[in-house]
Length: 174
Ligand code: PNS
Image: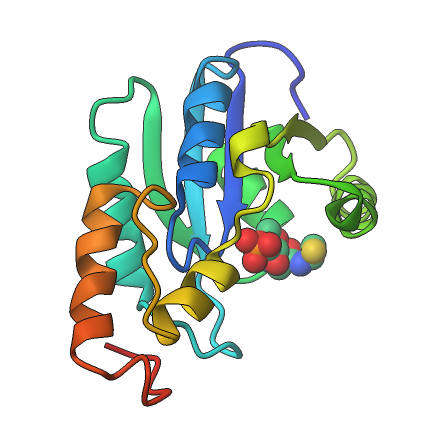
């Protein structure tokens, strides 16, 4: 792998949906890399709340003003996608010790599968360190308010789901 030239980094994830914690990480890592690709995993084995198209659409809206940031989706191994996109770094956020072990294993595995792939860990901001997409979905499902936890575009989409009663009925796909 070529280790010089512009730094292309990938910030991969499920982003179901993107939260303010993700957005903070996108902004901060965009400032570190020459180009940042926010990549949504197209995971067919999980039943997501939002389709990949909806998730990439919301990510594109919230990152529209950020220079050097691209939104994409991928299937299969992350390192294969990184190879195709000429990326040598992967960005991941760490909220606390509970994230650490999984992220450590993922970073080492990715480095093993594609030597030279570096994982850049960013500490989640203190105000976001309790936040996850899963918890946002749980709160919405139970009729709670997630304003302040997700970008406005996501909040509006979630309100639609919440008020329609679908989330409370446990029907997760809008
Ligand atoms: O937001 P998430 O769900 O924690 O993101 C996990 C993700 C998408 C980064 C991870 O599951 C992934 O990279 N999946 C792609 C398949 C892969 O490469 N697996 C081996 C390394 S874990």
